[in-house]
Each structure stands twice: as C-alpha cells, then as structure tokens.
Amino acid sequence: AQSVTQLDSQVPVFEEAPVELRCNYSSSVSVYLFWYVQYPNQGLQLLLKYLSGSTLVKGINGFEAEFNKSQTSFHLRKPSVHISDTADYFCAVSDLRQGAQKLVFGQGTRLTINP
Amino acid sequence: AAGVIQSPRHLIKEKRETATLKCYPIPRHDTVYWYQQGPGQDPQFLISFYEKMQSDKGSIPDRFSAQQFSDYHSELNMSSLELGDSALYFCASSKQGRADTQYFGPGTRLTVL
Image 1: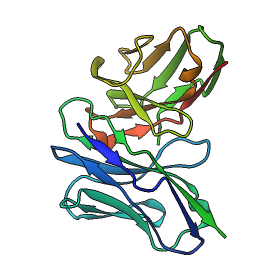
Image 2: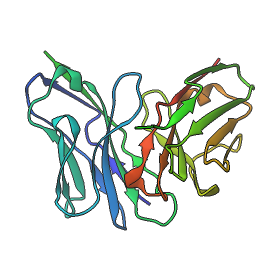
Image 3: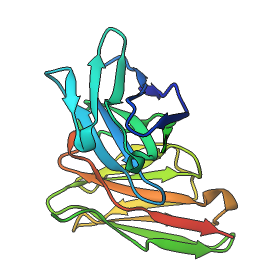
C-alpha cells in the first residue's frame, strides 16, 4: 500500500518569495506522483505529474517539482509566489496496477501568501 | 474541452435521509472514481469502476453503494445519512484506469442536518 506525508500543514510566505512544499511517499512498487491545488471552495486542479523520465517536472502557474527516488520525495517549488497562489496543495501517489489506479493523497499543505 | 460533470453541486439532507450523487465522465473515459473530502481533510478514495465493473473499494461505509451504467456515468447512493457524511464528494474519470489521465469534477457538497 502507498502512503503520502506532507510535512507542513501550513506554510506562510511573503509575496514574491520562493516556496517549497514538501512531500514524501512510501511504496513498495513503482508509482506515479502528482501535485493538485485546491482553491477555496473549489475542486482539485492538477498542477503537475511525474510518470517517468526527467526527474524535474514543470507544471502550470510556474510550479515545478523534483522526484528523488532515493529520498522518496517529490517536493513542489515556485521561485516567486503571488497572492493568487493562496490555496491548499495536495501531493498524491498512484501505483501502476492493472484496472483503476486510485490516488492516495497526503494531508495537504495550506499555502498562505502575505503581501 | 469537456470536463467531468457532477450533479447536484450542492445538496442538503436531514439525518437518516437518502441521497444520490451523479457523475458524468469525460467522453471516452471508461473509469470512474469517487472520493470523499471532509472539512479540512484530504480526499479519501471510496470506490472505483472500470468498464462498468467495480474495480477497487476504499473506506466506503456499507450504507453507501455505487454503480456505473452502460453509458459510463456513475451514481453514488447514500442511505441513512449521518452528520459525519457532510463532505465534498468528488468524482474523477480516466481512460483505461490510468491515473495519469484522471481528471476531477467540481464536486458535490453534501450537508447533513
């Protein structure tokens, strides 16, 4: 079974500062990794995903994440945040089973951008 | 591009009532997933269907049941509602069960009074 740990439940940063949201996963098999964003009172939007290949993945809104197999991590970064990035961010993992590949989510990190 | 459609978007029920949530997947998607997100919680997997057969089951109460129909839409039926069932219910769909093609609907917010 897979599990995901997001080490920070809340991350406050100032506007235009860099940010890193941490995610570690546990799995005995190969996995896909995802980051989703949830704005207040909205659904889940895919930011980026790692399937294979280059360990640095670029997503929407200037976000990127780096897959580190040895550390079983998939941290999300943005070099300069904006007020509009205020949201909940969820890291998720899926195995590569046959049939429906469900997502297992981390507990989420609330990113708050202060002016 | 067409997205996952969920109806209703909001639902208010009393304790012990029943509720039915509907999900219409993206065209040509054959797999449907249901997730439950409680207040301040992460989404939890409930159940999935692949080609109209139940594929996987998570922490879904026995009071809940679901099915996928011939047109691939899915319904989640919830009976004997409890206060703790108040949550955001997401449906997602994908092609051939692949997580990398999974897209989420906007969710149904269920409030049980």
